[in-house]
Image 1: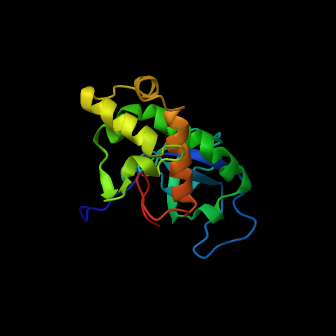
Image 2: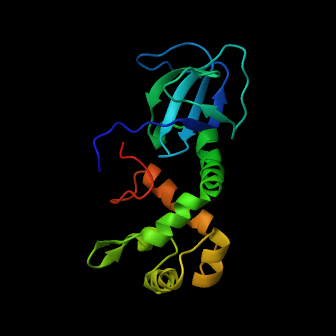
Length: 186
């Protein structure tokens, strides 16, 4: 892995707190807050937004380095435990939406994933995929690379790939896994 700094360009709103937090944190800024999940590395972020602006869960906001329209200040990364109850409830749906929007990237994962250790393949880290499904995926991708989730589902006979990947992303965000396939380390 290169040492380049990886940051999010876009984030999806998980929760909108129009009056900020009830309990102020160090470096706290007053005003409306949003909790977001990044589009590329699933980074959990907290940010302040323009006064008077109202956003909804699932809205896609620019959080990159250039001038931002909605977000005024990125307060920083937050842990899963710092998400509001609402944000935790919305996270699975928003993560699945991101996965479906980035289908080509995730299909490429299934087409190129390799073994992590002599006894474990990266594909096996996805919930619901054991040795049997892993071999079906590997055998099918050798015949012809997968093109879409439907193709993967039909040829490898696995249930809803986007949902399975979303479960994996949530495990990683909750800090429950040794290996990270899709998220940045905290």
